[in-house]
Image 1 (cartoon, rainbow, N blue to C red):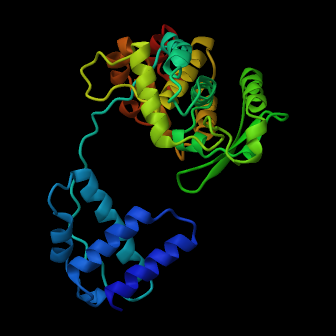
Image 2: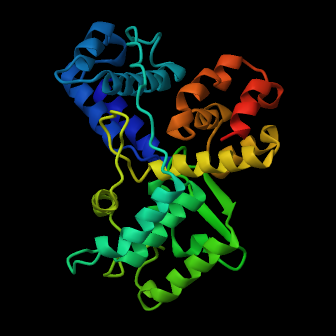
Image 3: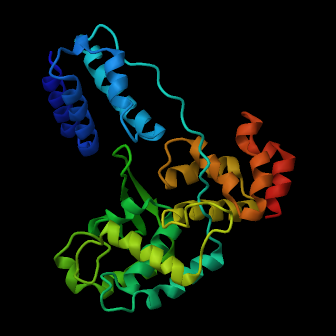
Length: 324
């Protein structure tokens, strides 16, 4: 089988499964043009490396393209078209040094309190009420920004206090309960935009009654953050992001449970399921994201350093966390 046909067949297969495959499709087509319409079995590791080692290609991008090609060749090898994978040795990952920003409770209040001033200009396409409730929703549920933007009216059941989150990752959906306070705020928001809701299926709407634009929302948030005077003081390049409200939700929830003496072995899996984490490993990362003044100490007490030992069996860790 020639690569042009193999690429298009693979792309069609992915799309038929409902996978968002636009960027990946571009990369596969770019690779096929680079090597020419040759039989799959004639492609060599050298040809793949020449494609991957293009100009201005970061290690992260290199590894993304590598894994894309690996899955592509595995697909055809599993169907007997390829005798072996022609993949070269993968580059080692770049050490992760980025640390998400954890907003203090006072900073969250500052963001919400500054929303009206931020959206006062008539040129703003998102009004202050929408901006406030959107940020409250992120902080109260820990969902991804994209998950919140994709929320439909039919996904919000305020009578039962349940929200259906259509997962942007792995095509997974989940239903999460919400508290009475958030229910009340969302009901007020629904009433405010009642007339416009017949024209758009999405839950969060701009002034025109259309779905809130992701690009506009991110720019709006950065303006709000600057007006609220919130910025990093730890030397990091990136300033606090809207997505960091997800991390803030998890850290504030964990901190509250620690202070209450809750059973973390029972509640951590519940937190992972609530925010849509596939496994516990990534959820345990939030331990190292508690307030900045404790960050260095918590890194030393990270669960990864204690192997498979249960949290509450470590008296040093528990004593430290209960003092937060």
